[in-house]
Image 1: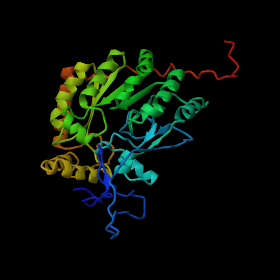
Image 2: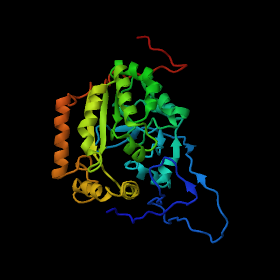
Image 3: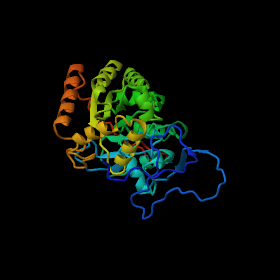
Length: 365
């Protein structure tokens, strides 16, 4: 059903994959040549090699990315990392690795680009005279609390800058590393400067392990909601993506568990499979859940006008048709019943202040 041929090109058979979502390495769509593994004809045994995560450093000239999408509730965002080691097979951000000349398959989850100088660059951008304040979204593409954050701490640095400037932000994550930053987040929440969205796709630990191999288990994410809520941080549960035929039957249970843990609001998006993600997701289904693959793919297409993806503004985040309407209705009824249909407190943009730098002349007034 995908636009790309199946099966996808295999990787080196001597490469051992451990806790990875993808099992192939389709070439970047902008590259003129495709690469495939081929036996060289020599009968010399090769040792098996474990595919490990590689982290490279990028020194950005700017970090605030602007967008004008009518489907998004923010106009600016920051990505501390490119690629994501969580390895979620359905991740809509996978195609972004093609802009780097890397594969949206295994490269996306094993070749991570970190931006440790992002906090310094952010402070410089916020000091510009023409800057106008609006909430910044972090985690809107790749997760800011993926495993590498524990060592590099880019997100911690960004939070320190944003707190110092009194700048509002929203965070979307499924990474338990966010609990490390409860001190900053609780202080910012007391000033109406932060909202956090925690992504919970399924409550089935076994399915989550196979579908999101290096992300925290579902019950860990529920605990994240509880700990954030207890610290006074407004939390939204992100029941996204909802995968028809695979996880959509859990929608009400996810919302209920999140509400018990302290979530104040909710959001959901039906699965969308842009560009290379469609083939990667189909390949994963046929490898991991072959008995359910056709049913899931047909259910996804039923929400997208007969295709696995509909990129049009206005429908890509919601789907269309009877099945999409029924899923949205179930979501609305559950949110109303649980009290999750209320907006989170409005973020305060008036608190923004440019802090003085060493050597600045202080104001007399």
